[in-house]
Image 1 (cartoon, rainbow, N blue to C red):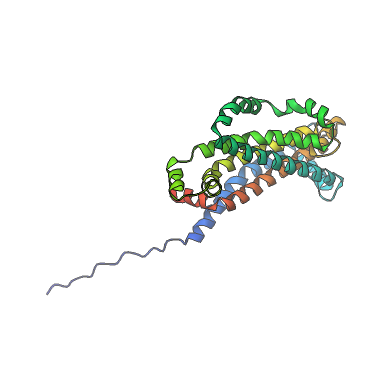
Image 2: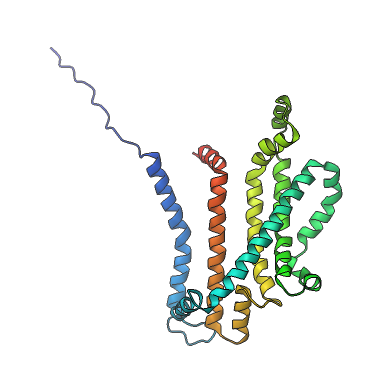
Length: 279
């Protein structure tokens, strides 16, 4: 009699749970994002530790001064006007960009007529308008908001237009078959379909707005982070100048992170479909 051996069962491997996989990927992304800035700070710290150059003070001295100036110090008064002007200018310019992009997409004849002007203004460096804006609005905050808004219009407008023009015609055929009105087609089909590219334009506009915020504060202004940096450089207070630059980087990074978090929440469906497509 021959003994029959039962086939050995393969070792059971429990796959990681989806939530654990997401946590690992999130941790990996965070580590990837922070290692370069930390390495740069470490290098700056080491190279400047024994520096006696007035233009390159030790980073430890700069960070101590940054804490004294920007954390419950006198320089915190410069934050509010900068952030207020940035938000007002950005929201105004981005709003105009979305509306103008939608109008140009909807009316072809208007788009053909406006295209040369749009691209002419798009390539015009916004800081070149500062003298004209100073003549129109003086040296107050209105000029700064107008400059930021001007720069925020064009990336949003062009990306909105491109996103809407890239929608598949089949979707419009479906909308017509379902007898959707113009408003329903716009809000239920066009805006959701173009939203990812619109978000790219809004983010590009945000970068432009931060740059223009600093530029506008360095010319004729009496407050703001850019004004603080320029004043420190003018009186040769180099460590104070560096603290302003660091504070500007913190503000820019924070604003960008908030935008990314908001965009990922609003366009969660888009990011989930991309993740499924790449897996």
